[in-house]
Amino acid sequence: MLQKNNQVCEISVQIFSGGFLNEAICFEAVEKKLKRLISRLHINKLIMGWSFSKELYEKTAEFLAKHNTEFYLWFPVFSETGSVRSLASLVDIDGEKIQYDNNNKNEDFSFCCPNDPANIEKILDIYEKEFASIPFNGIFLDKIRYPSFGQGSKSGDGHRSVFSCFCNHCLEKYKQNNFPVDNFKEIVSCYASTLLGIKSYQGNGTYEFEDPVIAQFFMLKSAFIFQSLKSICDYFRKKNLRIGLDVFAPFLSSFTGQDLIALSGICDFIKPMMYRITQAPAGLPYEAEMLLRETCFAEADTFDNENRQSLDNILGIDAMAIPFDLYFTSCELKNLTAHSKSPVYAGLEINRINNIAHTSPEYIKETIRSYLETGIKGLALSWDLMDVPEENLDMVQKMVF
Ligand SMILES: [Zn+2]
Image (cartoon, rainbow, N blue to C red; front, side):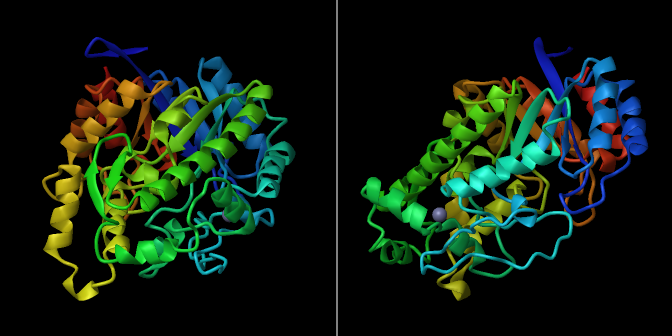
């Protein structure tokens, strides 16, 4: 246990062992990294996934048991799983299936519909076949959402993805909830040059919208994700696994169907990805830019300072910059911690990846210093220990002792 500002700060660490279709990294490399890390810090949890390699996980489990570190399987749910099972994809507002070309061998950001019971069955079958025999202490569920505005590679993809799903399962659910599907497209198009008619942001993912139907749409998506996740969590509970959830930062969460406070009630810890420097999905500067671009696209020629200024004003940030506003991000964590029903582990990127995450000791220093004053239970050192420079680890060690 580590002490900082009179509070206990727990440390969890993530290792990406490869995608479902990749060759897994080797145990010797993992062991070397872990030995070095454990000689500096006590690690409460190691989260590793999601390549198929029983041997890697079994050896790692044995190693961690000796060091009093819990072992969690990092398991993607509504995305990635489509690469190894045939899953029903999301359907857009025009009734077209949403499928994007995947240019990244390691990660697949296509999503399946969370309301299709057959999808959930097939996803859990991956766990059963590939991971159930491995002695994990817990499971860390990732991609437990709909796509974000950062989905796809061309203009309009994000908007189309966020305003889904309209498959038969979803249409039935909208009907049960008296949601006006027929004129929804028209309503959304009224706001195609503004930020969806957002009037204000009240923290913890709660926005006030001019149009109640838009508010209802996002509320329903969060309710659907919660219902599906609840049954998935019940399944893993029966297997005596503890449960962690990987979620978006609060101000981005409601656009992806994540009600963080509700979700915090069905897990053992929640990890908001507070990645202030990451220029990729889940990174705050990337997702905020995409939120802006994918909601204010109708008048592309006039997309300028005015749109930026309105998002800055709604969120109460100085300006969108990299790294993302530290004061705002820390307030987000403070609000979440105050209302969360389970401990909050702040996700902080410490790996360095060219053109994606230019982390530095300075960045880590200011971020950890501020995050530790928000009431969080711990830090989740993300998202891949295998790519962390020594100088970044030096700084983590300095800041948490
Ligand atoms: Zn659907």
